[in-house]
Image (tube, rainbow, N blue to C red):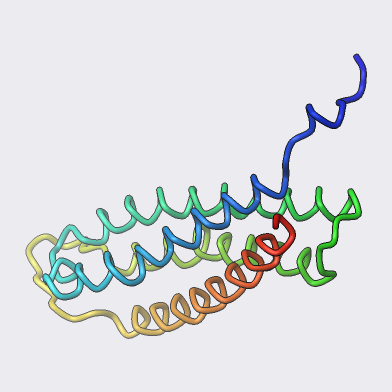
Length: 161
C-alpha cells in the first residue's frame, strides 16, 4: 500500500479546530445555560437529581474526552508536520485531556455518590460539606479548561487562516 498523497491526508488543522470549537461551545452552553437553569428551577434539590446528573454529565464527559483526544491528536500531527504551532500547544492539549479525565473518572463519580439518597425514608435537604468543595474544584478546573481551550482554539484558528 502506498503512502498517502497530499490530497489524501487528513486536514488536522480543521479537524482539531472543529473539535475544539464544538467542545468550547458545548461547555459554555452547559455552564452558562443548563447549570443556572437547573439551580434556578430547583432541580438540584430533587431526590433523583444525582442519578440524572451523573447520566447527563457522564455523556457530556465522554464527549469531552473525545474532543480533547481529537484536539491533542491534531496538535501532535501539526507539530510533527512542522506547522507553525506554538511550543506550548502540546502541553496545553495534554493538560486539557487531563482535566477532562479528572472530571470523568474523579469528580463526577464522587459528586454523584455524595448526592445519592440511599435511605428512602429519610429526607435530606442539605448538601454534604464535601459537595461544596467538589463544586469549587469543578469550577476551578472548568475555568482552567475554558481558558486553555480558548487559547488553543485561537492558536489553531490563527494557523488555519
